[in-house]
Length: 109
Image 1: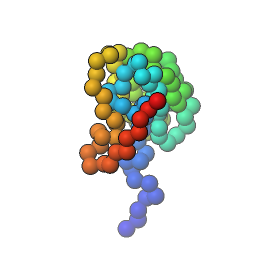
Image 2 (image 1 turned 45 degrees about the vertical axis):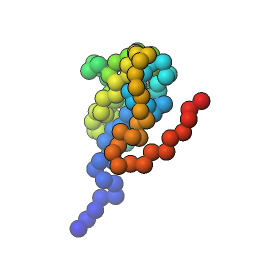
Image 3 (image 1 turned 135 degrees about the horizontal axis):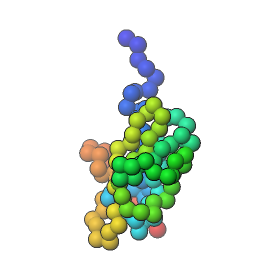
C-alpha cells in the first residue's frame, strides 16, 4: 500500500514551552513557541479562548497568566498551555509527562 511521507500526527500544531517545566509559571520567564507546518507569520494566538493580539509572531515571552493556544492555517489549534501566576507549584519536566519516554534531566542555570 501507499504510505505518505509524514504521518498525519506530525502535521498538527504544537505549543512548545521554554523552560520545559509543567505547570508553566510566570516567574520562570516562559516563552511559548508555535510549532507546525505552514507560515510562521500566519500564526494566530488565543488567550483564554479569545483571539489575541500577538498575531503573526511565532514565539513570545508570556507576561500574563492564562491559557494559551496557537493556530496555523489549515493545521488547527494547538493543545492548550496554561501559564500560572503562582509561587507555590510543584513542577515536573515536560518530558516526564509522556509515559514510557526516557527523560534526560539537566540543571538549568
